[in-house]
Image (cartoon, rainbow, N blue to C red):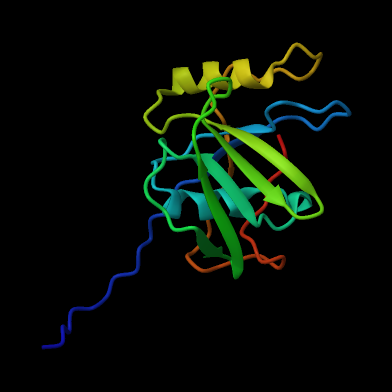
Length: 169
């Protein structure tokens, strides 16, 4: 039997990516930014994160996550027609939950993950602490990571093969 019920397109916008990147500076940083996903479902959250990254970071082809913190995921997935290899590693006792992003020829970026269940106040404190490493002008602001990019309609990507870009701060 075929349903003849009319399909109703969703008019609700997808939630913005909660991502705060550290200001660009001459000195290397231990954390390049903060990411506050809405859940621990890597297959849902990772494509949104990758679409929100600055184009200067290039195509991310490798992602390493804390094995105990994320839901099951395959060893690779396709994001915006790009194969991304997923690696799950044991959490380091010296590093909080992080996502490590690799782009061939361009570098590595480490994002600290704020637990999805964190309150706005806890997210603000984690952000301020992680992004303020004592350097003048490097401090985080006393607020949670601001949304930096809104996810567009499903399947829509920008000219570089990714979704909407946002400024680094």
